[in-house]
Length: 311
Ligand code: BDR
Ligand code: CA
Image 1 (spheres, protein in one colour):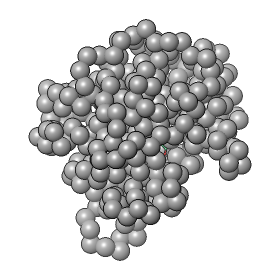
Image 2 (cartoon, protein in one colour; image 1 turned 90 degrees about the vertical axis):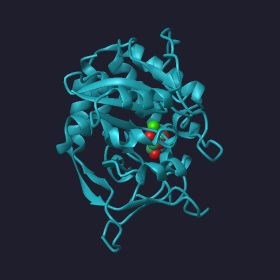
Image 3 (cartoon, helix red, strand yellow; image 1 turned 45 degrees about the horizontal axis):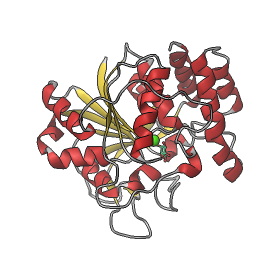
Image 4 (tube, protein in one colour; image 1 turned 90 degrees about the horizontal axis):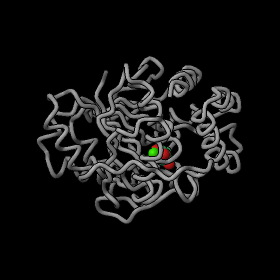
């Protein structure tokens, strides 16, 4: 199995991504979950991460609290999508498992130094603050990362928090800039992919039809999470962004994209956090990321339902 660190700001879609990873032990070993401020403040994202591990029946998973604000800016949150708790929808139990002692950034650094070089994949599902801070504090770890597979950015679908930017990149563009300039192998799941992974009624019914407490929970998160896109855009469902990252690790053949140059806008007020992808190869800037654009959405939801059904 591939060893991963999930860096996350749960978030209903982050929660489903965590479940997919924890339900796939033959493919993935979760070394730890590092929480970051994003959809909601850190005190809620770290708590939500623990709730999800307990719901999955995996209370031994290490969960660390990380950065409570972006590297250089004030935090922007997304309660308008995820609700006040970040995991609005069903009634949730209070977590009983404790946070693991230590800062998420130190866990990332120590793990990358302790594991053999090139054997740990980072999976960021929120703003890239913890990763950016870790790379700045311990540049020696950069060469030890196997790969980064992240949810963030957009090309054809452009922005969901501003007209130009996707939320995760917009919240901490300086951290994203560090990541995209790191030289590490990067795979990006942008809105171009995730907007094709919609929670239609039939797909949500399949979660419910599992007949498990967790299947019901996922369906209820989805019911809440969908209302934003349905009301605002008349969509069939909500884009299930973050699980695309984990699904890629298990079944990369579900996705297609291009290896291109991607740079992050960190200066312009108008386009702050834009992922400027050289999709058409019009510059001589060296490609640094595989920017995905296509997904087999039915295959993706089938995988999700099967793996969540195991927990
Ligand atoms: C991203 O922002 C968050 O709201 C979601 O959890 C996802 O990671 C989508 O733009
Ligand atoms: Ca997220």
